[in-house]
Amino acid sequence: MGLDYKKSPGSTTTSDLEELVREAKRARESAYAPYSGFKVGAALRAVSGEIITGCNVENASYGLSICAERTAIVSAVARGHRDFDAIAVVTETSPPAPPCGQCLQSLVEFSGDMEVVLAGTGDERMLVRLHDLLPVRFELRKE
Ligand code: THU
Image (tube, rainbow, N blue to C red):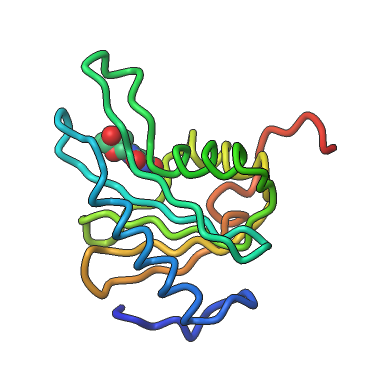
C-alpha cells in the first residue's frame, strides 16, 4: 500500500495528512501501555488547522485505560475545538488498526465525517472516512 493517497476522497492534501501521521507517531512515543504493550498515537486536525494529539494511557485497573483517539478528542475539546477535518492513528500492526467502536462513537459526537488515516510505524497507510467506519450511529442532539 505504501504512501498511496491517490484515492483520497477529501480536500485535505497528502502533505497535510503526512504531517498528521508524523504528529501521531510522535504522540505514540508517549503512550503508557505497560499492560498490553500495544502503543497507539493519534493526531486530530481541527478545522482551524491546529493539530491536537493523544496516546493511549493504561491503568492497573484495566477498565480505566483510555485509547489514544479519545485522549486526543478530550484534549482538543478542552482547548475549544469541536470540528475536525481528519485524524491519523498510528499502530505497529499490519494492516494498521482502525479506531475501536467506542472511539468511533466519540469522534462522531463532534464531527459526523472526517478523513481517517490509519498508519503503521513505517510507510503503510490506509485512508478511509469516519462515515464508512461507523455508517449508523447513535445521536441525540446537535447544538
Ligand atoms: N487502543 C487505542 O488506543 N485505540 C483504539 O482504538 C483501540 C485500542 C489501546 C487501548 C489499550 O491501551 C491498547 O490499545 C490495547 O487494547
